Length: 375
Ligand code: DGJ
Image (cartoon, rainbow, N blue to C red; front, top):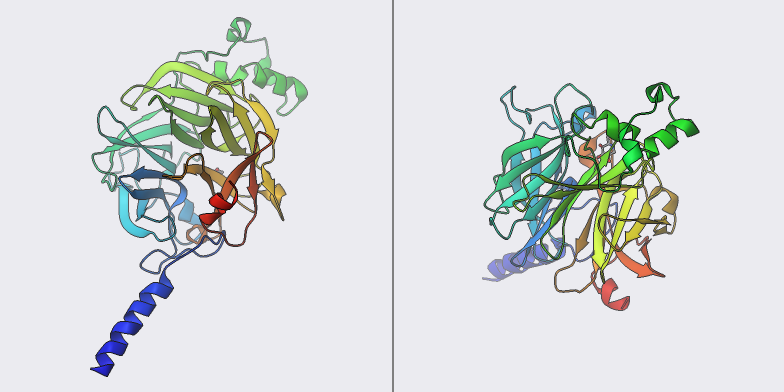
């Protein structure tokens, strides 16, 4: 009898002590099976009391950043403890599929469409053996947040459509602009004036690092690094969230921004981005605007603390509104490990707004009470 009780008690203790009770940015983060979470470049959707975290399933070794498996999904009720729900969009065996094994699929973001009742997963897609040249946005569909998602279509957005914030005179190329020396001041001015928008006008604009955002009025937007990562584009999605309306705007032209993540507080949109240094970290940037289409005001580096100049060795991926806590948000970022991508870790930090600017303070450990303390 005694033995039976002590077995039950040790079992309960094992469960209690193995539960995560706080966030430890950058540390190994075990799922409910005791395995480090594998959901990189991710985003989160909240559905009926459960958070679903979607991300890139990385593999061991140097090639682990190409998509050999697909996108994973984890679920949680408390944001600390995550259950592995498996692979929800699989890289396909079919060599003719655009998402065949060995392509590159990055930064999945899932949104729910109230009208069609479908879950839409938008992501960055690079075709197999083409490096990062295809620069496409792609979308997959599911009836359930746990998937499976079915690949629907890939796009070069805004084919044959000028941005809303584009001067009439910039619709025509200047002579020899394609001969300008990269990074010279003349070249940067030409980029600013839309040289690369003109270059890609017929083919469709590039889309690499991306996020999607659903506004309070249910309009959704793809925010994507375009023009060889030099300029962000904000492209409105159709009502079914499967295609693009012809409304789009450029943001921070020639500013070289990647990794966009967005939130809205008291009618103001805030965006956090990174610079472009491959898998290496760099200094984050922040912006605010009264309208999603801009004009966006540059607010500088939002990070405070040791290694704030390197975004605490990470790169933004998503900003999570916390359910039931008005105007409280978690900044989510990736600490990439290109030499063994599966070891990449996660930097989650609370966001505060001070003097109308987003602020990210480093913390070794924290929990959701941080929000109540900051109020
Ligand atoms: C940085 C991006 O943010 C990542 O998603 C990935 O595309 C790497 N660059 C590739 O170098």
